[in-house]
Length: 394
Image (tube, rainbow, N blue to C red; front, side):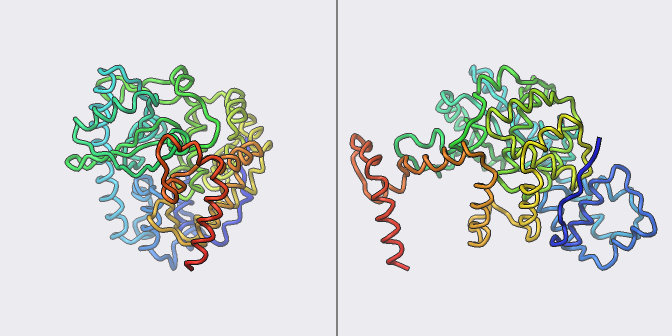
């Protein structure tokens, strides 16, 4: 058993370093030499970082055991308020999760919970210790129309943001969003774990390996442990691990009974071994996660340290990749970063996907639907035409 500590954290704020130290400690007891780390701290930034990384419930549970002279009382009280608010939010989401999944079940729709209160219950043993802004539900793609009607009847409105041509939405996208203005709850209905192109387990495979829980009055179904690990690392890596909450999820799940041989085969099959190693290296380096022999095999088969170090960029500047507008510097870095996480097979598939028509092609040169097949041979010319026109407008 061992931990890794090869990540260079010199460029991240000292407030974030302190936050990581408090969160990662099993029983944080401040020795005289450690008290110096609480000096000259920008406490407003400290709290802002805890909120940005969605780890304020854990922070609240930790700092209540610290010497009250170390942290300003206002910061402690604010963290406690945020923790209580999150508890109510999770209870509210849990109630809606039960209502929606029960109605889906009554209508013969299989559902797998991906995130939300189920992760707090399964990984943390307490729904109040993990934040969640919405419910993520995976269903078979053939049930999308039925789900759309059911959610409409429940007061949800669909966010019609997906543009498509030649049904590229089925693999380029992976979920559609619904919002209930009365309940103020957002639901993401998934038909894939991640956006394509890429390889991942089918819904039927995931359903066969599912687990069930009694978080609510009715049983709910969620991913098996190995499938959940694959989902968590693919999702976290896709977002550059820009929120530390996702790495704490990794720390929690590796403490469970995972079959590492099965997981290794699963990660290799679906081209996620690289990001699996990255996640384990980060969780070990930042949060003192103990690495077992099975985990070490995954780390050693991937460029884990290099990929782990590349995520520090997202921690230096508190980057939010969900923002409507992203600075050009961040967007360029993220494109290069995502490419670095891909295997050779993923890179070839990604490059080949550019040959498939995009909705922008149909916008640029509208054609009758029965002629949409012409977008395939026209794709290179339309791409060049758009680039030339956009360049001329600059």
